[in-house]
Image 1 (cartoon, helix red, strand yellow):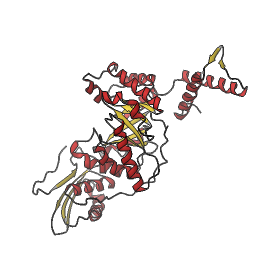
Image 2 (cartoon, rainbow, N blue to C red; image 1 turned 180 degrees about the vertical axis):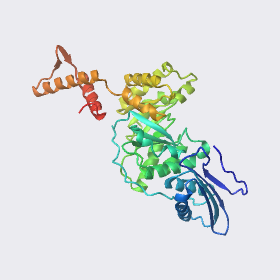
Image 3 (cartoon, rainbow, N blue to C red; image 1 turned 45 degrees about the vertical axis):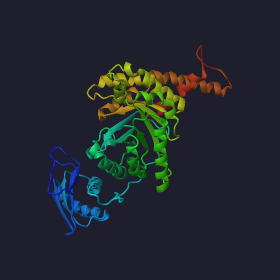
Image 4 (tube, helix red, strand yellow; image 1 turned 90 degrees about the vertical axis):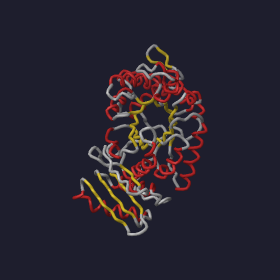
Length: 404
């Protein structure tokens, strides 16, 4: 990646990226000055089509930020308007200008609120500092899209990434995907919430949670922001347990807020905390994964597994996902779109499972109609927990479109 570097002033602020390998982004260089108005220079690979509109938008954003005198260079690589606005705002803030002012793109109509118990088989991570991944993320068909502000974002880009993610929540159509944001570890994550919560994401993932206090602190800040902005729709929480201490506190964490709908685990950090190597068999993390499942079930929330990091090993992913489902997880994370169909297939009930569940449900319905307290299937008596499991499997199969 090549960068434009200007060192003529200690007051020069830079945001964004440009170069031959960069797509859907831009770099803004902003040098404040005391007088002379605005001097804007634009270099764009689509200048002939959009150069004038980029200039107009830059002038509007700078005016809204209260920037009256500055030299601005824009090196555009096909950025959409919501990205242009976020990059200019980030550069202005880094220059000490526009503090306390937000320049927001028009907001698309919000989707219906996300259901507490909605299907969460797959969630696709998208780096919060890479707008090229935002635009078509929903087309891959995952149940959720995670706009990530944590591990995938360089420490020096945290401020700019949260503005990009904020604008993306307003300007991008995520189709039927649950709109998720992974904030940074508390307390830095509280700054993320200030920008993100006003845009009503469906769910917020909180990383590296080790105690219920982390959830309580985040939950309190979210409630305050929702109140300030008059937001009434739910914003769900998914704590990520990534240490031995977090695993030991799994149940208290899962019960720390009524907004928690799922509990998940981050195995890279967890195995690093243990000082062991993460393997394909997962023996080193079996205790932790079972504990997450048990704590989640006890708390009445979903259990969601970690990501499978080897993008090229789809058979390894399939084996892991099948084992994950067998342990009681309801889904897992994705780091690449091609993992999504493999995960969906692995977490889907088989034809044989569906047929057996159908027979159990039919036997249960027949017993109910006859006023019988005992359910039998052939010569076998069916216990109530078996019936409940069959009902849940059929509901899940219906949600996946496997049965009508």
